Length: 344
Ligand code: SAH
Image 1 (cartoon, rainbow, N blue to C red):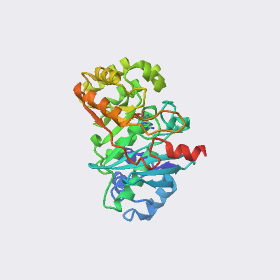
Image 2 (tube, rainbow, N blue to C red; image 1 turned 180 degrees about the vertical axis):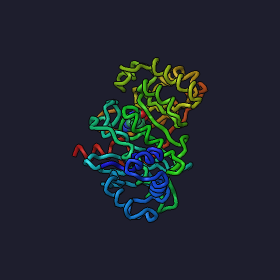
Image 3 (cartoon, helix red, strand yellow; image 1 turned 135 degrees about the vertical axis):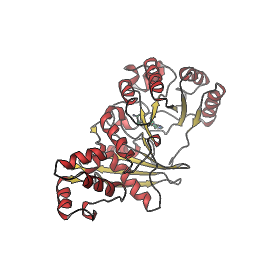
Image 4 (tube, rainbow, N blue to C red; image 1 turned 120 degrees about the horizontal axis):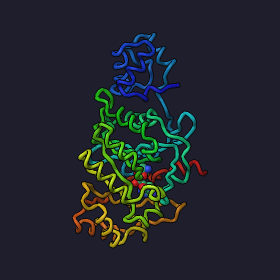
């Protein structure tokens, strides 16, 4: 069955024209879904009974059901959802000073095989549909509404490589951005990639001012080859050129994510190499404390080491921030809760 969360407003107008419905009907349905947070067609009281029945027959609304929920002391909430086909995904709500940010999963499993990441412990089974990504945001949004809050930011940084599911992810951000929908500002949405160059090029033309984050995690090809298999396909020079083009085209600042791994990429010499790599790019570096995954043997860098690395970047006039840890008392590392459940 089709899912009603799978459409931008214009796509829903076209879609509903096929079942003989006028444009304004589609607009009404769209507003029910995203403005009034309807979770069933039967509550859409200004639609005729006949139309409501037609919708019930042709479309689903829900895409997922809650399996488990963990709430950390800092309010970070991790949701484990089951999809219609039984696949398990994780979604995380992070409470920030600037709003409520949801970290969305884009694929069931991941094929990128990054050595430090729990998501790659389980290979990709399939891509998520746009509706399945919208469903994650809607679920969290409906929970927040009970507190008088809403989802203000979205990061596509959960399990999966979003640029390996480009069309659905692109559709997803367009749906969230719809003025008559959730109206989440493009500048409040970030897509994070391990560096699929052709898709970075495509993304610079997506027509929305969404943000780009690059998972770099290494200051040179030698280390990056070891940590991230994708680097053997798209090396760091080509990656830098592609990011440079992206910045020139969009005039947007790019974020580099850099996990500090004990004894692997966290020396002062590495910091200097990193500074050299990003020199001349409109960017900032987000240093990420590693969330240890018991299966792979990497350790997080010591606090002193992290601080020295950070200071070295600042000394070299590189914009760098240290990411605050969220929900470290729950299974908050990427894919941890899911992996635990599935490997059991
Ligand atoms: N595939 C995309 C998005 C998912 S990963 C990408 O590579 O960007 C999202 C971010 O979480 C990446 O920067 C990833 O490297 C990081 N990450 C993965 N496992 C982690 C862990 N155990 N601790 C801290 N960050 C982690």
